[in-house]
Amino acid sequence: MRGRVVSKGIAEGEALVTKEAISFLAGVNPDTGKVVEYGHELEGKCVTGKVLVFAGGKGSTGGSWTILRMSDQKTAPAAMINVETEPIVAIGAILGKIPLVDKLNRNPTVFIKTGDHVKVDADRGRIEILRKALE
Image (cartoon, rainbow, N blue to C red; front, side, top):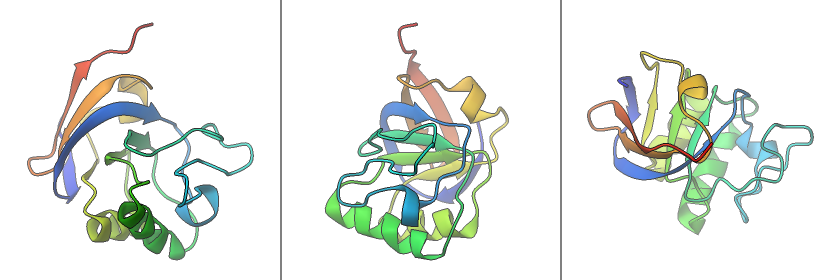
């Protein structure tokens, strides 16, 4: 898959996928990397070291600083893929040096499944599924 580069870098890891938007300020605990937003599809799941695939961000601009804090504390995702990135997530990924790609030629929340092993080449805007999750 190909998409738009938002934040450069290359990373790979296990995908964690949701069709929902994520608020990093109120929805993710920066100390643990766990999604804490009540009722969220990923509630209780840990984003640390994952390729986090989600619709986009939501919420306050403080989310950018939360992403940076997570990067500094080593609780951030290894990479992120969005349907469409908004400025909060974009700024956080750039400051935290987290590879981020969006506007793919296929909807990543449909094509990529939780548990797939995914490589994000955000230097060239390429996403590759290296290994599909066991069904």
